Length: 342
Image 1 (tube, rainbow, N blue to C red):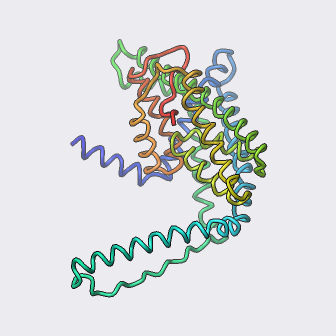
Image 2 (tube, one colour; image 1 turned 30 degrees about the vertical axis):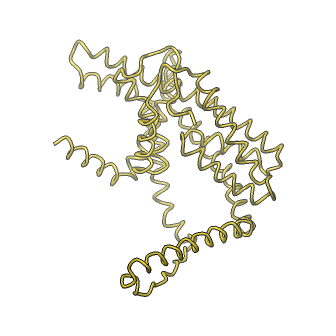
Image 3 (cartoon, rainbow, N blue to C red; image 1 turned 60 degrees about the horizontal axis):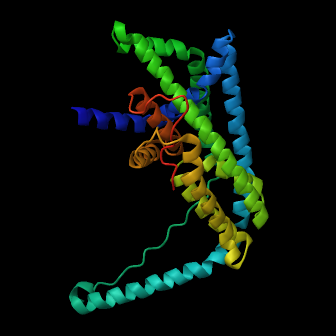
């Protein structure tokens, strides 16, 4: 029954992605912004103002990130022909190598079992990939708008009523003697996740600034924007930096010739390794350690279930659950960053 229930829950979460994904992202964002709500409560201000300021700040940040990504996407699209021209020789070399291996394999197979290889091999034509049109964008716009509204509404009301929600959960899920303890554990989980996220944000901001400076010295155009992207992708442990390195490979091929084309990707790889191996452990510590396999599996599961939103919420949710269940001890500062080593 437990297995059947788990599978049913996963299927329901997958089918309800359009609602559950932005809702979960809003709750995780609310947990990260929980110190803002606590600040307003401690100083006697109305919770409405704290919730409104948190919502507006979040939406402004998302809008700024979208505006920052726009010139990068336009630049990559405009440079795509040059990238393809530079990479074509490499691609053709790999194709020739694979073609030679295929011919050797066919020859060996024909010598071993000639009757099994008498049938002609049919060539499968490659399907062309159609680019999205304006009509496609107009069709998907209502779905995106609805998810934004779900996110904004859930974030505002969670920040507004977070204390009431935790008190209600404590009342329903614990006996009379354990209600205060459960409420304390819920707030403790919020505090640890928020401190973890704040510390990682500062570390990633430093990594993004240094990356922008190094790319500027190398001569990469729009180096500041690439630094912002480095800041963002480093939140998605393992996969984010890996995708960023591959992207910088294409950027290097598009803008430089020879060995210098590898410099942008190599420089970020070195910086990310130093950050993951030395900077993050030194600033965050090692007491709040989480098995890297558990971190990786939760990240993969989140990406598989809800795509990019699942990858964003996977690690904070994992930390929140572990702290809530006393798997991770409560500390005055966050202790370790799970999976940040590379």
